Length: 240
Length: 240
Image (cartoon, rainbow over all chains, first blue to last red; front, side, top):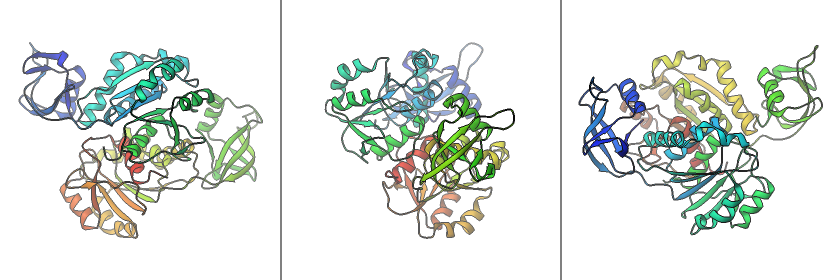
């Protein structure tokens, strides 16, 4: 946690923000801050700067006050990431990476090779997703919460939603076969579609291509989803 | 596990290799292979191809036989990675990523901000490191085991070992301050030195620069070590 991200929902009054249990635990145990210490803070979807820490007392939980916010958050990645829903045990770390790297628009969609049971996982609850994305922001020192949409059906997404999302962007389908090498350091915004373990099936690949996506590959090595996300984003936008 | 990596130490006779407990468990529970099934295999530090599976019986553990090896492993990254020893809970995943991405020479070294206790962690035992690196190879479909050296003292490494390692390579020091942007898609081999959480201290940065390294940065965002490794390697060598 390189930034304490203050949530306007936890704003006590104009200058005071309550800390969440997770933030309080980090400040007490890792930062070991005392009353009056200055900490790096940011306001969710707002600016970053410094704030003074007041630890919990008998009458009040811990909070941050006397906040001065002068710094803008880092630039977002100009892209929309569409991913087949990863295995639940990989989702938390993958979401943290996605949010830490500056993706602001994310769709988790169904694909033939995504096990149906993944959609029932508790890690998909709104609060759990928000928590992982927030941890990514606090790691990277960013304040802007990504939008994450869950789309449990493949075809309506690709046929009905994709055309509008793709407007004005390059469409890249990560797919290891019959693909040209994924471009490096692109200047345009893009939509990147990342398949499940085992890849998109033939029908799905056909649909993506039909909608104007182009298939790209990153070489012979097969990487885990939590590794392939930073690899691809860094390759597409190395300077951001 | 996209490849069963057979260890010459477990070779029964010319055409048969015993499976490790971990491989046996994966074949039984995930692949659910039966007697005679053909699996993708590779021989450690050798070629890749196919082999026939024989499950464990009352008289013998499981093994692979009738092996045909025709395919070469993917190209290695032309680099030496020098890392401050990461936190033990990040080490396993970081080693897997490093090996999956094709690094073949790795030094884990001490730095002022590495807690001394990290060097006592059981994840640093030779067998545990080898296991993580092997899992990375089996993930990526590679056979060539990286060399990993543990260097618990900073200064003798930089002063005595680094000059020979650096010969004929570009030296890049990942460091967020007073640094130019990390280059993209470089053609030369390199030594990349990656600091601990909190970065190299002033003395260490001075030493690296004195030895001919150049400091480079990847932008405002602070990423976890397990994320920054794929980000940097993909940025330096996107086409490998």
